[in-house]
Length: 424
Ligand code: GDP
Ligand code: IMO
Ligand code: MG
Image 1 (tube, helix red, strand yellow):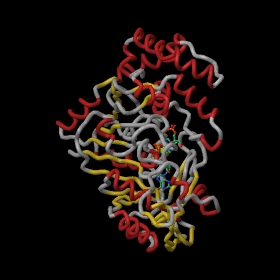
Image 2 (cartoon, rainbow, N blue to C red):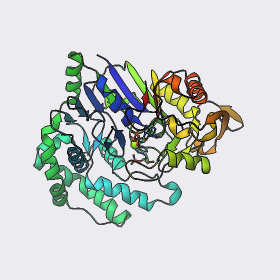
Image 3 (cartoon, rainbow, N blue to C red):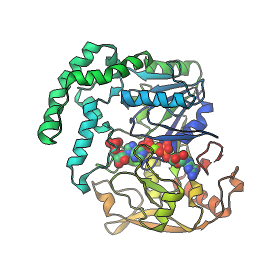
């Protein structure tokens, strides 16, 4: 019996889905606690590939309980589509293996309209580059106390009344400010109803489910979405997502107070970022191109090309301080093969001095200059290595360097997308 949390340490897409899927054999319950379908978590088994946006990455084995916590924002249409896609892939979703908190806020059509209209209205440099999935506007409504929650799907009259209450403000913004078409309450209800009817049987008290699992001696795994630098408070604000991605939010986002026995910080062996915002170690050159192509760095949700660059120990140090990983999972080490020398950012030069943690003022991350240490690279194919000893000397040195700098062991090394391509 233990609590495990898996979280992203950088700007998302570190390979959390693969690590959660891999560790699922150790857990009975897997729960998402924040974010929504802005996430795209990829699972690769010997013959199949799944990209999950809302359903926890523990869904593949038939005997697990996957839960969507209250801290998530949920688009009913997207969830139903994901259930159908999994069905086509041979995975059946039923109320026996999936539960949704009644307190989870629903992404409504007007949230998506507003997300897109706002981005469109911003000038290039001010755009956040959101996924356009309505994430920010839905969290706004939650905080403004006008949100619609999953439990409301049980009562159509309540649903319509709440939509009617929320809509005048949304339509005023859409029509007057963004020059978009207004939405009709009945029309929205019509869109939502078939999905709502389908999802009602999945409603559960997620907090209670987790407590029952604990009492039965089961292990619960908390699956983070996004990464520390996208955290609404601790990330590169305002170029962030709208939820707390740090491990501390797992409690509030599920309704469970248990401390984490294991916290696994997923670290991509280099850095990527999709969407706008500062990225000090970005390589807009053949090195970045190597990472982008070899790592197939395209967004799992939007298909956008990910920006790529060297590993940044400054942001990772902060992730360790904010989230307390007991171990690291270093992913995509194989992608660095083919680079003769590898740089690692050890500090930032900022206002005339070297700093070890990111500066905290808004936009200050755009004003730092990375200080690099150069390490030898290699050209060997490491994608079939099964133990750490199988790895070439330089790859081992690279991992040890990260472990020392972050004062945290890397007990998982991933050398390919498949479950099997992992050194434990
Ligand atoms: P997540 O959002 O953190 O779950 O990560 P994504 O699924 O968005 O992106 C990670 C991508 O890298 C996916 O396409 C994975 O299949 C792939 N991947 C994961 N681990 C490895 C690895 O060790 N090597 C390679 N080459 N690909 C990997
Ligand atoms: P996973 O869980 C990478 C980014 C978007 C944008 C910013 C705000 O797969 O790691 P939002 O739609 O959330 O309002 O967009 O956050 N973003 C992600 N980037 N991985 C993700 O999730 C992301 N989720 C959001 O690109 O820059
Ligand atoms: Mg992703």
